[in-house]
Length: 339
Image 1 (cartoon, rainbow, N blue to C red):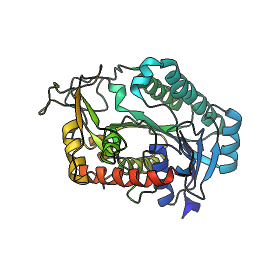
Image 2 (image 1 turned 180 degrees about the horizontal axis):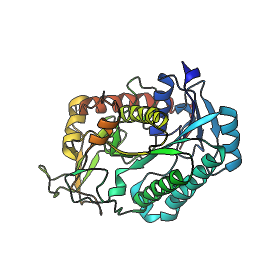
Image 3 (image 1 turned 90 degrees about the vertical axis):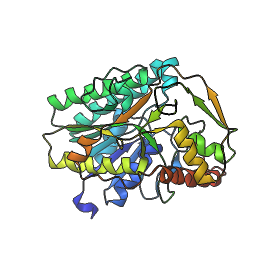
């Protein structure tokens, strides 16, 4: 099966979303290789049998060698830094890791004649939208360096695709959560800030509880509402997007990735309580600067463009998979590296 599919290089393939994309590609019969510097990724997240290169995406010589050895025809780019508050206190780190390194990667892709590029973008490029549901043509006005660093990369891709024989897809993620249903990989970063990750850690007594940042939002229960998408559904969208890029090489794509409905912080914590049959300790805290009341995607373009049907959209399913991975991670931690 893999003979008919071109080889894909996944950057950041030892990280959270990247490792799920690797599984989705492998499960669908694509030849796949991974490059990751293991600063925030984990070697155990890369399946056996997948070619792994430890290194930096700004290393032009290494990339040229990988492209030649693997016969790479497409890149899925997940490598980068993702903690919004850190981007505010250390902006240059984000402009280096996310923007400058992406420029180097795109340059290497053009030099090698790799024709297809899928980019891990973010709803943070929209900033605080003044609409209830966010479409791709909603103005992009980031409010932090993380959002700007991703928006700059989107612009570089658009300009590069106009000048060179390459097409791309920028997928703007909303709140990614959950883990592989077979518990092959999941969110493994220590000190992660994702709500569902934090909540299942608290449910397993890895944290004392969960801080609820803001109870005075303009939402039904006063807590922030977000559009949570299961990471495996997101990974499936990447594979379908790659198929579409190959089928229509003259077309580039930009699409939101979410379910088009939101849950509040308290609704998420209630779901974790139901799944674990216990009550997480909740501490009410002041809202964080720049947190919008509600951020919900309009995924109409994604569903109209690709044959994408969410398989794991139920909130309790997302929590159940995150919990199963958290339990497995406790066993892995004994003998595996990572930070």
